[in-house]
Amino acid sequence: MVDYIIVGSGLAGISFADFALMNNKDIIVFNDDSQNSSKIAGGLYNPVILKRFSEVWQAQEQLQLMENFYSNLGGKIKSEVNFKIPILRKFFSVEEQNNWFAASDKPTLAPFLSTSLIFKTFEGIDSPFGYGEVLKTGYVDTALLVLEYHNFLLSKKLLRNETFDYNALVFTEDGLSYKGIDAKHIIFAEGFGMHANPFFNDLPLDGTKGELFIIKAPGLKLDVIVNTSVFILPLGHNLFKVGATYNWKDKTNLPTDEGRAELIERLKEIINCDFEIIRHYAGVRPTVSDRRPLVGTHAEHKNVHILNGLGTRGVMIGPAMAKALYDNIENHIALDKEIDITRFAKRRERKS
Image (cartoon, rainbow, N blue to C red; front, side, top):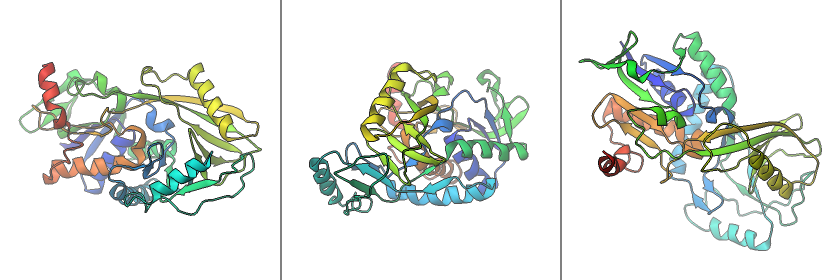
């Protein structure tokens, strides 16, 4: 009997799988590549919501856990995936500079916002009003992380590349059984694919489509991430990742002409050099209306659990949420009420 069947191997599934393995638990992971948001994600981590100048929920705790988690994981897969790099907010006016200084005076934001404006000249960008630097930032190479962790699981014979069949799940006295695999628990970490899950498809997972570019711009010289209406992340060899759009209606993984036009328009507001679009990606982020993850246990089946809704900050919040769920199952530590799916219990009762 294994301890955990884990369905889904994006950021959520990988985070839980690795916590389980670190605690010497036996796991088997199912993945069918139907959801690609983790692979194409920008991967940025940033403790500040720059649009509203507010602190990311539990930012300090998430950053500390995240750093240790990706450091350990990188050693396991023999690949560095966490890259610390400054994020600069380009200013377009004196008013934006003043708003920055006002935000940096807030006690919750002071550790993350530098009060020294940067007037460094980057080739390919005009910025007469300079930049503000966000501290404790960087990015995780999510595509590399997913690829190498899948290879790691395959090498240990812990990954099955197949679509999970909910109808084949059988509950037993000791736990549950799935196609000959007996397990104590099952974790559903399926991202937007949760809508096909009969155990949790009544939860309010909205899904927000995002589109990104990889561009080639020899005239753009950056060694930092620039973030305004879109981010520009240097990848080396004159390549840059640019994103992202937010579409709350379209739930497909297909790039669109509208998304392309929006990214081009916003990019041209920031840079003044020519660029070539090398790739155009799209994926649906698993987002929730109250901006909190979906973590917890099924009301009737006590060995059926969910880890989902990581939203736009999956690389930063994923390890913390995986640890919270693991500690809840194994050590009976209560989940924070803000992430526990029981917060939607009344809504679910009304629907039933």
